[in-house]
Length: 137
Image (tube, rainbow, N blue to C red; front, side):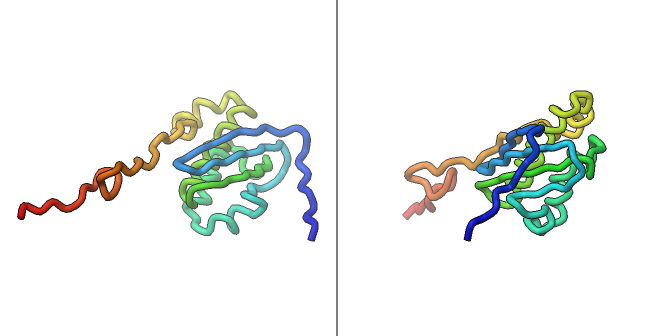
């Protein structure tokens, strides 16, 4: 079965967002539309309403909800990491569209990349910091 290639209008803004091991690429088009993630609506892709609100937050702050079409491709990580990566990518795209929104979006902390990553496991330990149980006798 051959899938039909998706067509995206030529005039779009592409931005990247990362969180933990998740990566999201957002394409923002100035056209009436919705937010789609990996070809699905955000209601179908993210079943938790908190994550849906998290993704739409930059659009609400900039008063662009419903007036722009956002197509997101995300991979890696879990649902929470992907949602936060999407939020960062959308916030960066909104700032590229309307530079006057920088102060409002930055005040909400939407342009700050959360750099916390999983700490790697060390040899001789059970986890990153958890040592094997020590017995006195």
